[in-house]
Image (cartoon, rainbow, N blue to C red; front, top):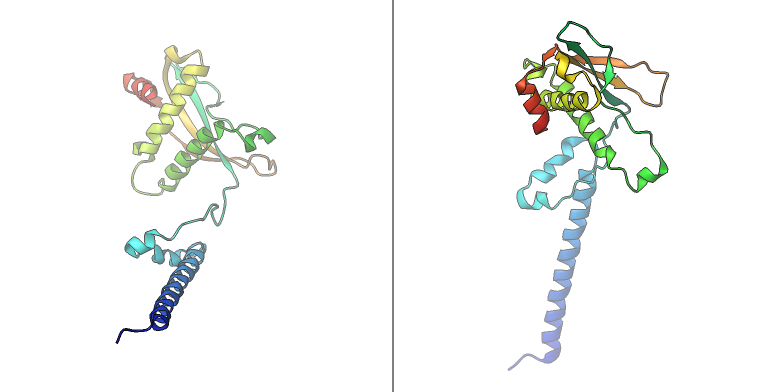
Length: 199
């Protein structure tokens, strides 16, 4: 005997309901895993280490648990071949914010790059490696060399320069700047000039 049409449609309906229920459970589990993975406590990051399934869990932590409340300023002073030392000068600056920056703010990329380089360099300064031997310092040195060449007319008379990283609170004038890292005097040489042209 052949099964009746009603029995076939009933079995098909049961399978469809089972598949639907399975998809709902999988999506609900994915939603819970996604929600837990956004928690500031990094213990939930283990969910992302589950191979291919873990790669499907997004990371939407747009903001750090403790956001930065300061900027880094790069200062430099120069030493001429005659032994004359300059005052500290700015190699970097923070652009005053305006409403137009909500739409277009390309300078922010350079400011963010300086911030990240300084942050990484200072974070590694407690290690045994000399900070001036790190890649971040090489990038910072190239940035300062380019700033000196573009803004300081004494480049051809220099024997060296020094870099200073300053932590500054920006608009909060109640906090005094912190002088975090001063480099030794860097000799101006063909190697430094080449680094500035490559960066």
